[in-house]
Amino acid sequence: MNDELLRRHSAHYGPMLDAIQEILETATGPLVWRDRDDARLLDDRSLMQVLDPVVRVGPVFGCGVATAAIDQVGLVEALDRLVTGHGFRPLGALAAEPWGLLHCNANDGYESTLHVELFGYAKAWVDVKVR
Image 1: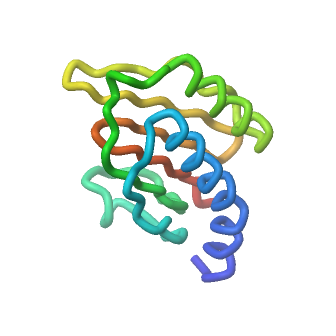
Image 2: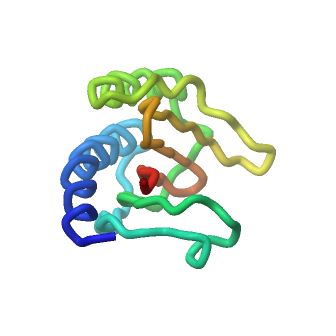
Image 3: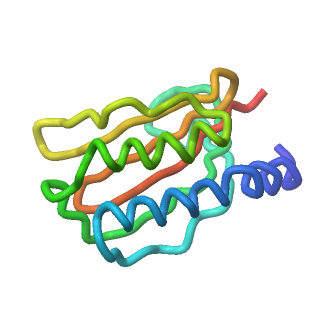
């Protein structure tokens, strides 16, 4: 895995993640954001399970989300407008777990999957399959 490939993925998906950050903050109210992580290689040594290696771009990560107050339909519609313009399929509805986690993902039908989570925090990242 060369640094040029990591930079290319970061340059390609980073602006979309930055725009997602703005959409999430509009939906949730002001958050305290951590700087977006650059792209890095994740493989079975860095994950807790055996997966095909991926390049992870991000995440953007903000704290202070009150998930009960979120307009879920409006949030997904805003995210769908953005991500479909970047070649991803629509996210669909947010899935809700019993412990309060809201999450969804979308893929581009080829190599990349966008993940969005809300649970006292807002987090979004892209995993790109390594070929």
